[in-house]
Every structure is written in C-alpha cells, then in structure tokens.
Length: 112
Length: 115
Image (tube, rainbow over all chains, first blue to last red; front, top):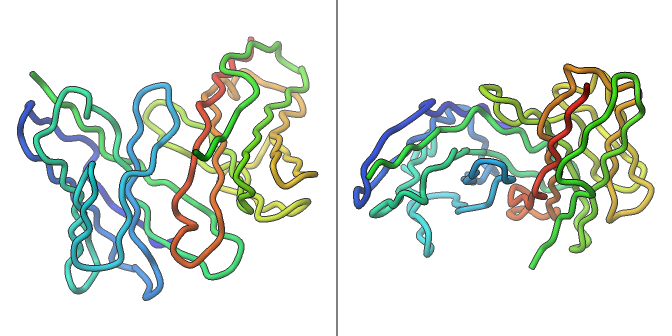
C-alpha cells in the first residue's frame, strides 16, 4: 500500500466545514483511496472511498485532484459527535492478499 | 449487515498465560486481520490471513501467532502473555475484489490487560 501522510490533529467548531487532506505521492494506478472514522473504544468505520474527482455520500465528500497524489475528506457542518480519528488508506489488490495498513490518522476535535 | 464479532470486550490475564482472542465474521470474507492499538501509535497490523490456513506477518508479529482453520474464524494467540501486550486488539475483515478490498469491517475490540 502507498504510504500516506496526514496532519496529526485538527480543531474545529460546531457547524463548520472540516477538510482533512492526505498526501499519497506514491499512489499506484489501480489504487483506491479510502477513509475511516474511529471513535474512542470502537473499531474504525468505513466512511468513503474514491478513485478520482469527487465522491459524495450521506456522511462526507472526497475530493481527488487529477494527479491523485493527495485527497481531501470534507465533513460538512460538523457536530460534537464528529470528534474522532480519521484515517486515510490507499491501496487495492486484484488478488487475494491486501495488507491493510493504517497510518497515524488525524485526530479531529470539534468544540462547541 | 456485516458483522465482525470478537469473543471478549475486556480480558484480564496473568503474565505467562497463553491467551486466545477469537474473531468471527459472518460475511464470507476472504481477508481477516488482527491489529493492536495503543495511545499515540495508531493501529498496527499484527497478522493477516487471506485464506484458510494462510497467514502473513504484519508489522509487529513478535510474541503472537494466529490460526485460521475455518474461513469465518481468525484467532490471535499470545503464547506467553507479557505486560507489554496490554493493549486494545481489533479484528477486521474485508472481501477481495478490485475495489472492495480496502473496505474493512471491524469488530468492537478486546481490551486486554496483562498483570
């Protein structure tokens, strides 16, 4: 899997839009970009996945520029319950065997 | 819904004991993983299995072994528990497939304390 780099932490306030950027300079042609959210004392939860341009679901949007060397997770109008650690993963495998390796993640703190 | 179930939420064991952490998934996923998570260190991969009886070492396999006798079950074994293995252990599974195999489903975790 391609190595990823994210900010260690971010602070925001309720109602703001939060953008977390992940760098993945060595992304391969077949790689997808996947983001996870983890609350304290729980396992990570899949949020969104994309390959290029923009993907949006009920939780977040994912923006991927043309060179795909970075991606930005966008959380609209965050609330206190969005306080969590967010992980960016890059990879794919056409065969069985994909060592899912997480980086350090970004700790988002949403304040009232 | 995909369900990944870990056998215990909290576990306390003594130093030197042999410890089994069990994980079961009900979605016929090929890939299963064991991680440990410690404050400030994120999620670190211990072992990974991509098929029955197949396993690969992750980043920190020392002191651990695994068993995958059935597709749905992946066990993590601490042969002789030590205090530095006190941690949160997380199990995950993913299907294979070009797009899907980074969409992992996690269990709730087992908080193991070795005393």
